[in-house]
Image (spheres, helix red, strand yellow):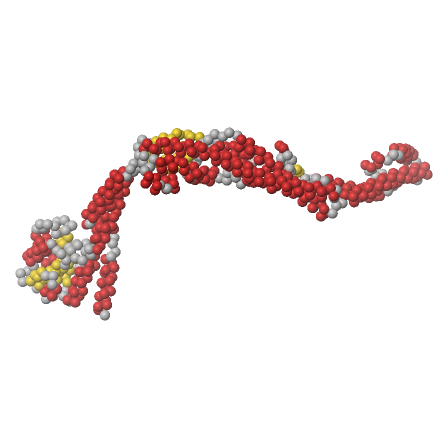
Length: 581
C-alpha cells in the first residue's frame, strides 16, 4: 500500500516537472547558447555558399493596354445591340473575367511558344533538353493587371543579361500581333454563329408566315385579326424599322364585331325611348335626318302648335276649336314617332345581320392569333439576325490597330535576384531557430534540474538557505547565513549530516563544511557523506545541491531512500552560482 502511494507521488512530481514555463525555456536557451550560435553560424555559411553559387537574374518590363482599340468597336456593337449579346452569348459578361482570360491566353503556348524556342536556342544542349514550357513560363514571365485599369504589366527574367531585352521585345511584338488575331477570331466566330442561326430560323419563318396567311384567307381573317386585343408585339418590318412594335387594339373583324354589338345595344335603347314617348312628345333621333318628308311633317306640326297657342290665349281648353287642334297635334306627334320607330327597327335589323356575319368561332380566332404572332416573332428574329450579321461583317472589315504600348521594353540596371540581405537574414533566422530547438532538446534530455521550483518539489524539507557559490567565495560571505542556520534548525543537535546531492563543486562544499563546523558547538558531530547508511545515525540531515547538479531520476531515488531511512530531514541548502554575494 505504501509502495503504491509512493509511486503515485513520484508520477505526480514527474508530471509537474515536465511543465515548462517561458522563464525555464529562456534559461535553457541561455545555458545552451553554444548550440544556437553554432547552428546559426552553419546556416549562415550555407546561405553564403548558396548565394555565391546562384547566378544573378536580370529583368526587363513593359506595359500594354488590353482591348483599348481592337475591342472598342466590337464591345460598342454588343453594348448598342443587347439582343446580339444575348442571342450569341459572346458579349462581355464581365470585364475582370475577360482580362483574366486574356492573361491566361497571353501566357499560353499559342502565343509564347516561338519565344520559348528562341530562349532554348541560346542555351546549351543539356539545358535546352531539360527545359519545359510551363515551368519556364511560370518562372520567367509575369503578366499582371494594374488594379482598376485594363493595363497589363509584363516582366521577363533571365540569367543572361544580354538576352533579356531582345526577348522582352519579342514578347511585346507577339502580344501586339495576337491582339488583331484575337479580334478577327472572335468576329469570325460571331459571323459563323449568326449564319448558322439564320439558316435555322429562315425556313421556320417562311413556314410560319405561310401557315398564318393560309389560315387567315380560309377563315376571312386579316393580319390585324391575329394581333392581341391589348398590348403590343414586336413586328418584323425590314430596314431601319426592323424590330418595331405593332400595337394591337384588336383585329379588323374583332373591331367590326364589337362596333356592331354596341350599335345593336344603342338602337334597342332608342327604340324603347321612342315607345315611351308615345303621343306626348317627339323623340328626336339622329336617324331622322334621312327622312324625305321630315320638313313638311314638322312644318305642319309647327303650324298646328302656333294656332293652338293662339286659340288657348283667347279660349278655354274645353273649347271645341282647342280640342280639335290638340287632337291634330297628337296625331302629328304620333306619326313622327312611328316614322322614327320604323326607321330604328330597320337599322336594328341591319346591325344584327352585320353582327351575325362577323361572328367567328372562338377557336378560329385563337388559332389565328397564335399563328400570326408566331409568324411575326420568327420574322422579327430573322430580320434582327440579318441586320446584326451586316453590322458584324462591317466591323470585321474595319481596320484595327494593335494593343497600345504605354511603355517600351526597358531593362533594369541591377539584378532583381538573388536578394543577398534577404537570403542571409533568412538563413540566419532558420539556423537560430534550429539551434534553439536543438538546445531545448539537449537540455531536456540531460534530465538535469535547474529550476528552484522543481528542486523544491523533488527534495524533502524546506529550502533553508541559498548561498552564492561563485569561485573563490570567502567564509565571511557565508558567515551570517551559516550562523543563523546553526542557531536555528541545527541548535541542540548532537550530530548533523551534510548529504551532497549531485555533482557539486568540491571547493564550495569544503567551504560550507568549514563554515558550518565553526558555527556548531564543539560537542556537535558534523558528518559529510552521500551515503545514507552512514548518515542515518545522525540526529538530523541537511541536503546540499546546486542548479544543474542532480538529475530528476536521481532526486526521485533519493526521496524514496530517505522515506525508507526514517531519519529527520531539516531541509536543504542551495549553492547557487547565479546568486551574487
